[in-house]
Length: 435
Image (cartoon, rainbow, N blue to C red; front, top):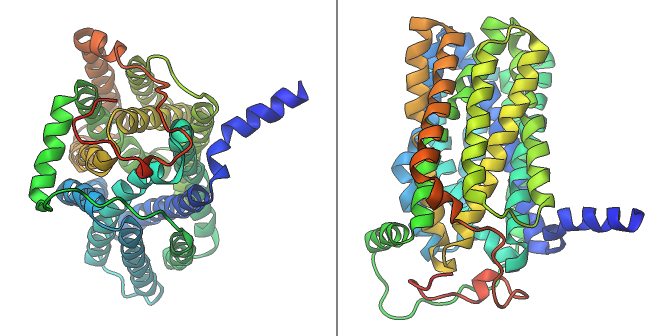
């Protein structure tokens, strides 16, 4: 039994055997910690400066809007450029914005426009960073470890919901927002170091004349449009990003500060609660080598997630709210792990950047949901607005299951490929070959 337990643990973390993936994972962990610390600190800062739920939703929209504008271009650039260099540049930019905001807050010179300007710049860096990071995963592991690597990547994101959000909340007890941003910049220095240490194999040269970037973008749309699995999974994610994800950017800070009266550190506590569930969910996915019907699992996750949001809107206690946020967090991270796994498994290596950037395009619509939430809250209140958003997630997910259940059920997981001993990037498959 002990031997079986050790083997199970080894299987759960097997992708970390690969040096480049370990460095990529460590960088993802630091990057995620910084994102969550920034989310908590920026929400506290804008609420302290403006005392406005709508301004909170607007600064979130400003931070995420570049994903919508640059997400597709970022994927095309990732497929034709040195991905490691792109990461280095975006990480230096993000670190610079954190240092600037830290100095402004610490000197008492911070103004509302500083919060918006740095949100725009750091959001632009993030728009290029995440598609590149996701598309680099297949370059660092063999194909048989891909789902495990994707899940462990989600584990890093989830772990830092706990670590990053909670650390920011704890720091706010002892230091101001400026101190949080100084520490955030130091974390980014570590992320830059892990990226610099990576040694990736040379990418194969594309045969034939080099096409323009907009030709690459058009090719990505055609490719996804010709693959029903990729198209329906990308479209399904719209429900989560528009009506679901604003729960953590908009509603968690407001629930902590306005409804539950937990103060600034309470924002970090509730963000950490979502991370506890997300961390547990990502470990479950990492432990499982495959899921028989991941398409159906996506809809199930959405239904449970929407139900959790509705329940949170009806919950009046801190513990009850935290437990339901943990459930919501576990559903979102497992949803994204299955989605990323499907997109990477059902696309060819040279299309990974563009395919993942289409998912980032969906993510870029989070500002639309944030503005919807920010408009509902002044008119209806925090809890009624959350009730409506959760109900929409449940209703639309049920409609998708009714209309497209057969198509989703046809998506299979646990795909095994040839040349499993080689990294995916080492054996490119011509565009148009179905896997």
